[in-house]
Length: 85
Image (spheres, helix red, strand yellow):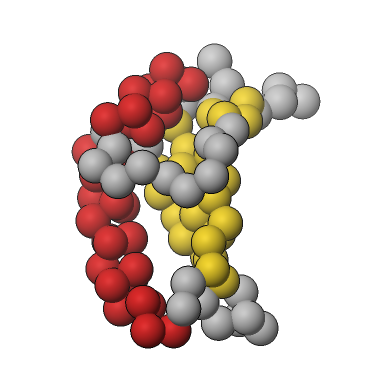
């Protein structure tokens, strides 16, 4: 089985930063409970521009976690599969 990944890019207004970061902590806890890993990175040159990564060991786990998420993602969610090299 290969890992599955969803990538989401988000840029928020400065006034929404505290709320966004608070929601990220909640989402991280949700995905951890759903057997997924969740990371967020911020562009140091463009404050408030973020990239979120959600990873699971199996696409069905990731699909179920996304479908049941309390907060839907923005834009189209593409699930990428890890290539076995």
